[in-house]
Image (cartoon, rainbow, N blue to C red):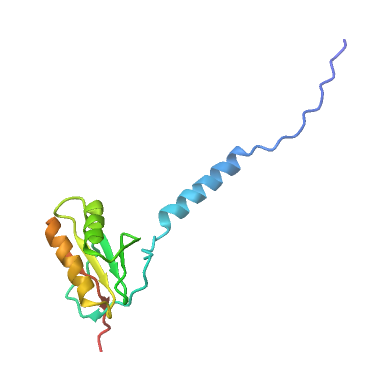
Length: 136
């Protein structure tokens, strides 16, 4: 009897399990990462003693010490029409809260422009963001 001689199989590296592990690690990292709200403008919020701390979700309006505006991370010109247009674009109805991050040295007129634009659009839920002051 003549047996055929088998050709030796070449060893292969199976990449599927390694790719599965890498994808699971990536999914784990994405789900456990806390996303920080980075702003286009640098502000120093005033301090206050709040009764309770809220994590509000809504349209983020940032006003820096020079009176420059950023709405939901994009810089907006400081005129009233541009602020009103940007608020209208980002608001999802009259119950959308406006979260105002105004620098402690921000010009009063910038805050008033924001409040006036929100009132004209019928956005009545306005929240002023502050730093929590540590108790003595």
